[in-house]
Amino acid sequence: MILNYEIIQFAISFPFNHSNLIFFHLFINFIFACVIYSKLKVYYDPNLNYIHMKYPEFRRYDKLSFMRLWIGLSTLFWPRAFIFIFLLAFMSIILNCGNSTSYKFKFIKDIIYSYGCRLILFSMGCIIPNKIKYEKKSEEIYKKYLGPDYKINYNKKFSTLVTNHVSWVESFYYCYLYACGYISKISAKKIIFIRKMAIYNETIFCDRQNPQSRVLTANKITERQKGIINGSIKTLLTIYPEGTITNGTYLIKFKRGAFMSLLPIKPYVEIIDQSEDCTLATGILPLHYHLIYASCYLYHNVKFLELPVLEPTEFMYENYKDLGKEKWMIYMNVTKRIMAEISGLRMSEKSFAEKIQYNAEINEAYN
Image 1 (tube, rainbow, N blue to C red):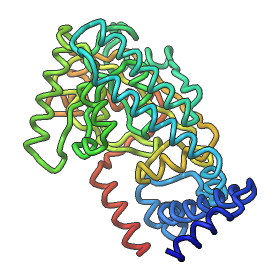
Image 2: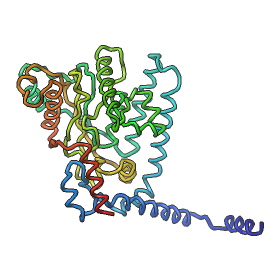
Image 3: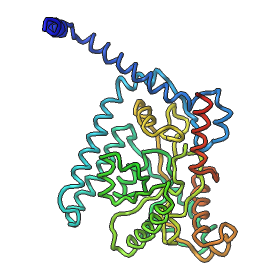
Image 4: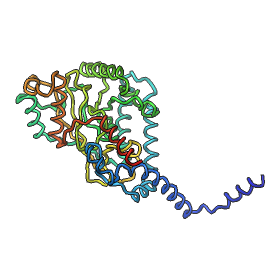
């Protein structure tokens, strides 16, 4: 009892003035910065360049700064983290209450969903995600692959939004534009707020390790696409055909899901400013560490290239039959070429398997 009384007396008498509070805040964030830095430095280690150079699609091209990390954690990170979690929690509660089948309720919820995602981007420093169009270049390349008579249309009805996967940013951005759903790995169900939002936007979950799950997912995608085209399904579907996150300098190997139905798609390409000290491209970094590091910077530059609606043609099947044995293969590879040629990104046939291999190699070498 005497000991407890002395501890209480000490706690009451401790001078918690402004100077001490600032020192305590800086000290805690210094420890936090040390932990994050130790987790990230393996991905920036110049001694492992012989490994990094083998995987240009996933490696880091930016810089890792301990001082920037410490300063960012001490100033920007905690307010942003609070706003981020608050908005996710608010949206997950609102979107899952009331009658979701009512058109009136869904319209209101879609507005909350859309602008909630926009506020999340704003809070994380993505103040103005620019949407751009290269209309003349797009028309030239579309007619090269789809035929000289192909009519360029940005507003035609489409079954799926198809885009490269560079970071967490595009998921919120496309939700802002279209209040859409996604194809997601099944482990995302463990994140409570993400799970609730996914239920609302009718996200399709896939277990990558289960071949039967992949087949079922492909069937669900085709059914969803047909429903969107015939109007029976209102929530748009967004697919990342690469199946994993890159560093934004390449388009890697595409998967077939978005193309099996041969229905019209709407391509977008996210273009990252690679000159930033910390780019928005996640690449090989674990997503949560990249989210923390990126939030330590005041703002980020990112552009979204909008392409016209793409619909397969007989001209494409006939003139580019060397790109695949089946129509969906031709469609998939032509889409990849169009996206690469218009955006200026390079093409690669690496996939998620090589990313896993890359991560294993650098961790083995570092340990």
